[in-house]
Image (cartoon, rainbow, N blue to C red; front, side):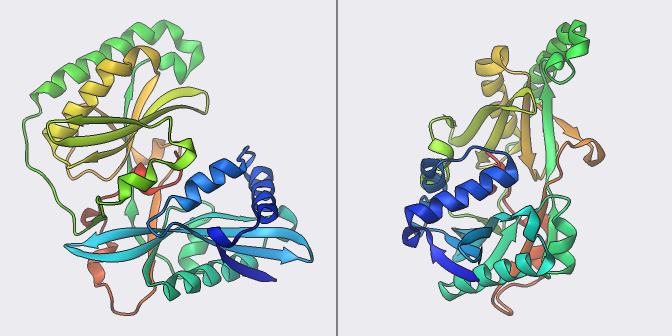
Length: 317
C-alpha cells in the first residue's frame, strides 16, 4: 500500500518508522530533529513523502524536496528526489517505480514542473532506462591534497611534500586574473535558497564567507576517514573570485584538515584546486532530470553548462 503525505502531515510514529528504515538501509543514525531540519526547511515549508507499507510494516520511502529555481528571470518549482529506499527483502523495480511516480504526481499537483536527482552508479541506469530520466551531465570533483596521510596513512612521510604542493598551488592561484562573472540559464533562486538550505543537518556546522561581494558556504567533516573541507557553494562565480575564496578558506582552515574538495560544474579551470579525472573520483555525481510538464522546457535543460550546480543542490552534506 502506498501513502503520500507532506512532512507536516506525518505523525511522530511515521517519522520514527522512516528513520528506522533509513538507519537500517544506509547504516546511519538520523533522528527526528535531523529529519525535520531537512524536510521542513523548504520554500513551501514542507516536503513530499511516499510511504510503502506491507501490512503495518514500512518497507519503503521516497522523498521530494521543493526548491524555487530561475530560468533566466522566470521562477519555476523543482523537486529534488532523495531518500529512495526499500527494505532489502522487498527490493524490486516496481516498488521503486511506484514510489517515484506517486511522488512526481504529488509534486506536479502543487505546480512542480521538473524533478532533478543525483543517483548513485547503482540507481543511475534504473532511472534512465526504467523511469525515463535524462542526463544533464556529470559533476566534476576539484581537490587540494593538504595532508596526504589523511588519504593514505602509510605514506605519512610525504606529508611535508603534500603541504608544500598545496601551498604552492594556493600561492600561484593569486595570479588568477579573470573577473568575468558567469551567469546560468537555470539557477537557484537566491532570495530564498540560502535561508532554507543551510538549516539542514542542524545548520550549525556550515561556515559562511562574504568577501568583495562574493558569498560562499563550506563544511568540514570526516569522509571515509579523511578530514575533508567541502566547499558547497560560491556565488557569484568568476575564476578570480572562486580562487580568492579558496585562498581565504585555505588560510583559515588548512592546519586542521586533510583535503579541500569542491564538487560541481565550473565554466573555467580553477587555479586553486586540481581537477580530478572522472575515473579516479571516489563517487560519481550523475545529474539527471525529468520534466513533469510537457513542452515547458526546450533541450537546453539537458546541457550542464546551463546549470548552476554544486553540492548545495544535493543532500550529501
